Amino acid sequence: MSKSARVLVTSLGVGELGQRIRLEHPHADVVAFFLDAFLESKCRQNEIVTMCRSDLPDDTRDAVLIPVRQDGEAELVRDYLQQAFLCLREGGSLWTATDNPNDTWLGEQVKTLFGRVSRRALPEGVVYTSSRVGPLRRMRSFECEFTFRFRDRLLRVVTRPGVFSHRRVDPGTRAILKTFNVTDGERVMDIGCGSGVLSLAAASLTPQGGVWAIDSNHRAVECVQMAAQRNDLANIHAEVAFDGGSAERRVDVCLANPPYYAQFRIAELFLDAAKRALKPGGRLYLVTKFPQWYDENLLRWFQQAEIKAVGRYHVITARA
Image (cartoon, rainbow, N blue to C red; front, side):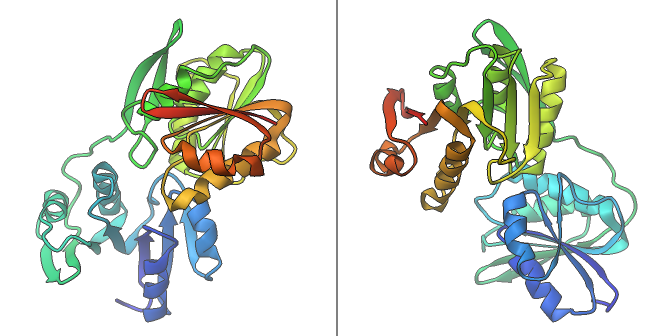
């Protein structure tokens, strides 16, 4: 790698690969790319240049590195590979690796886009390298629009790879849709909004109020903004945030469908955000598959709460 090489590294965590490349090539221009602002904030503490946005940049790079987990989202990988091709200069290098020692799928995706590909098998996985030669043969769109019915209205959802519940309404969201209620004029916050299904539903109930859709994922926020326009819901305000957004904003209702990884640490962040945002007497509706943890810990945030089974899920209603 030349001293002046411009290198872009996507991240599976908090930029560990980008930090390693920067240490090994201190004169190269290394940038760690993120979709998620929370993960980027952790990486910035390590004095590496970061970029957090919905898509890889459209400027010219000498090399793009894309680490891939074997249990990762396949469509996001294909999206990243296509964008990597477009931002590489002619002759620029793609490096991608998976932790699956028996992988063939990732190699096939690289070959489809780049043509010739080199494969290096290691005990812990496989590394593929290729170079950009010529223009992209076919541009593929990974954006999806689908509809769902909420009470008496059909609502349009926009999703992209990397956004929670891409291409569908997940079962947990369906459970909370059956349970929550909003009165017209109330202000609502959708914490970790994903593609915005709950935001759209809430906004349809409170045309005189407002819905604040917050997520740490830039793509999620852009998807909600597009869906709000397509549904003519001007009362939706979407923003990138991982701490509940503006401290001055107070709402009547919070909606939340926290992810299950990280040993409930993200659920704790969601509950912190709801506690700060809710007005006295305000309501939190939260869906989970693991009610026992909330039964044991919810008193740290809310004194009044009930847990109701809805199919395979449980919806928690708590009052501030």
